[in-house]
Image (cartoon, rainbow, N blue to C red; front, side, top):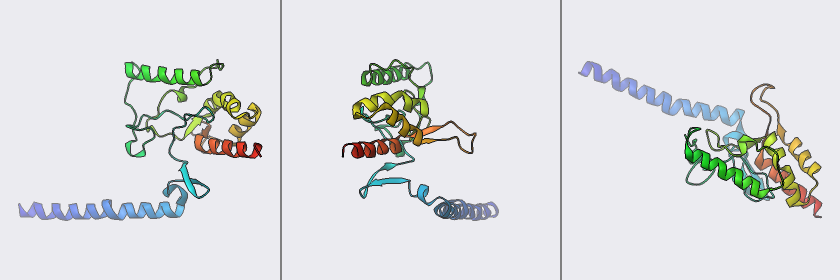
Length: 195
């Protein structure tokens, strides 16, 4: 018994030290040097106050703002400590009802818009925290935002273009728009045009 217990305890202690202490410290140190902004949460501040993170989606419900992708986190949306998908399959009636509710909300906010609703505006992602939407989702909402802010639709689309991020390394993923960055640019534009 002693001949197996001691090596097991030594191995347990060594792996705990390597995997539980040394590895996390090394990864955190490398992150602080290579990606300092992301390690700190990519916090965005305005007038010295934090207004959000570029890495975690936020709930915008006012028609003056672009809306992000729905969040499946609970009990409150975009709760980073509850990151997960809904785990509802395509035949689940709860998923169908949730999507229909989101479609209804989008149509109620912009009844004149007859364009097809992009799927990322009505379905949550796997993490439930997406800070970005597709370019199509931003373009779909541009008319409503322009009307609500009394800004020309061309200016709103110009801001969408300025905040469009291309594919990673030119071929990974799809072009996307960070909702927080776009909404902050809208606020700055509104403040500028109201002067």
